Amino acid sequence: MMKKVLQATALSLTLAASTTAMAEFDRIRWQVPMGFPSTLTALGDTMPEVSKMLDEMSGGRVTLQTFEPGALIPALGVFENVSNGNLPAGYSWMGYEWGQIPASALFGATPFGLESQEFLAWMYHHGGDELLKELFAPHNVYPILCGTISPEAAGWFRQEMDSLDKFKGLKFRAAGVGGEIMSEFGMSVTLLPGGELYQALETGVLDATEFSLPTVDEQLGFYQVAKHYYLPGWHQPSTNQYLYINLDTWNGLNGQTQALIENTCKAANTMALAKAEALQGAVLKTFKEQGVELHQYDEEILKAFEEATDRVMARHSEADPMFDKIYSSMKAFQAEHRPWKHLGYLPRDWGVEDAN
Image (cartoon, rainbow, N blue to C red; front, side):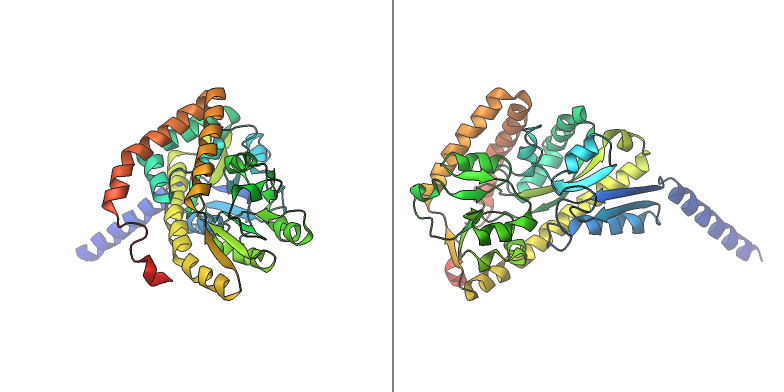
């Protein structure tokens, strides 16, 4: 009898402790518009998975209801609506707001900058996340890195881009600081959401475009209207999405709820990067079967892009102290990490002859 009493008491205490711990999560119901459709692999399907994980781990107390682009706000309007308090949160690539916050583009993607695993290292162990929070605090936004993926491709073109002269006058879609760099070569650069790009290419509104990973580009059908696909994604060695949370809303949460959201987004980075890396090789093979010519920019063109990058970054660093502070931090880590990257890994071209 005593043994049964002790077991029942232990069970009651366990259930009580579990209930108490569960009750410590805030009960929240947020509408979360996204900058990308949830159908886009690794780019748009990460936030719905984050929402699912939060719901499961909180026992239904933390609910982030995702909305497709355009359902609540325009696809590129996440930052503005979260900043002014129209919405508690939103999910998007960071850099669409770079007209208001130039340094934000560095966190979305930095040309010739940190690759995905390096970016995570800088963010979590070399001060990047602290700089991110410092940058957005004056705008009443608390951003959380919540989905990093592999490099983008450099773009889809109707003709072979084998000289710098061919870029002049080209109508090209690009985002963030990469777009400004491309304009250095006489390109007419515009920013359009992903859902509008196929028609723009098909009708001649655009001559060429970059958007995302090969898997995403395949889903958007670019290979049907442009047959020259250029890599590497020098302009976006990593592509980084964020959960934007209104700062007043964030400060109103208790510590346990905040920790749940932050740590779930860390899990999302692993999930998104793994998915991105898993799928690209097969899609490149499919493109070749569909008559797409895969190209790597030659060293002369990449060097020209790098020199233009240095000019653009120097201009912004001189004009904006926060841009300079963040970019300097990134470059310092990149330089520190370079010997390990060079010596610690097999050369990029090792065994590549077996892949052709």
